[in-house]
Amino acid sequence: TEYTGVKMEVVDWSPSAKEALGDCLTGKRVFLVAATLRPETMYGQTNCFVGATLDYGFFSANETDVYVCSYRAARNMAFQDIISPRDNPTKITSLKGSQIIGTKIKAPFSINPEVYVLPMEGVLPSKGTGVVTSVPSDSPDDYAALMDLRKKADFYKIDPSWAAIDPVPVLSTPTYGEMTAPALIKLMKIQSQKDTVRLAEAKELAYKEGFYKGTMLIGDFKGLPVEEAKPKVRDQMIAANLAFAYAEPDRFIKSRSG
Ligand code: ZZB
Image (cartoon, rainbow, N blue to C red; front, side, top):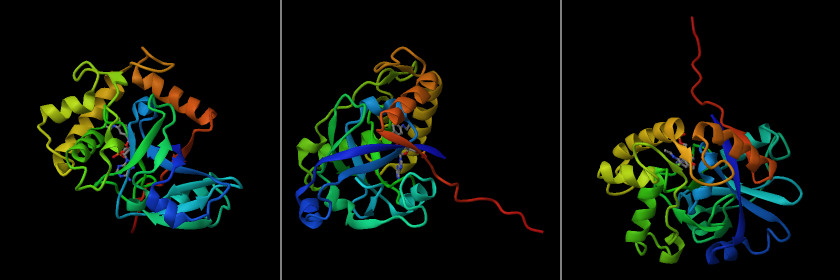
């Protein structure tokens, strides 16, 4: 799987991260790295998700920069020469997702240039980087999680203002209009992020419709089909040093026997 690793620079740590980190990152630029398959939707980022119970490592990328992601992702990045040294990533420290929640970060290319880190229940530790940037206009999972957070801010232990940015129209599709994910959530009567079976269906539909029939509503490639805009937006982000190509080795390689 060929992901785009989006570099979300930390602007302001949450109080609990600040306390735990002390001065171990002084003089460094720190980035949460989100793995996405939809770089053309980055204009519509409204927040970023981590898993509250997951472990996040702080890995030295080079002399000045530190990347925050799962250990697995850091090891893959080292093999792909995204971070150095090649053999073994240098871990400075680690935090639980719950400690990172409430941190303010930059969202490259988003019309909301600064967003907050929030919790999502379905973040898989074994996929991508374990950090997911949120585009609720086009990702049903993100929209469902954001609505849960707004309804139950106390339960999720967040400040409601962190979840206050509304979904932004990024692309239009013939079947679902300018907000594909909210339209699907309504149509399929999905109530929350716990409705994982129907959310998986909605994701499939959103992918197909967005990729094959979508037209960009925003950015330098406004008016272009999504299929054409996707690699162009990705190239721009990489050229601006706001992202990098990150490949995930397929884990289930069939072996022949006999
Ligand atoms: C932004 C985005 C915008 C995404 C969108 C999707 C959509 P797939 O196809 O199942 O591999 N993701 C990345 N890492 C994780 C993780 N560790 N746990 C849970 N979700 C993760 O899904 C790849 C997508 O799943 C990635 O692309 C990321 O969300 C999320 F409009 O990034 B995406 C219809 C989907 N739309």
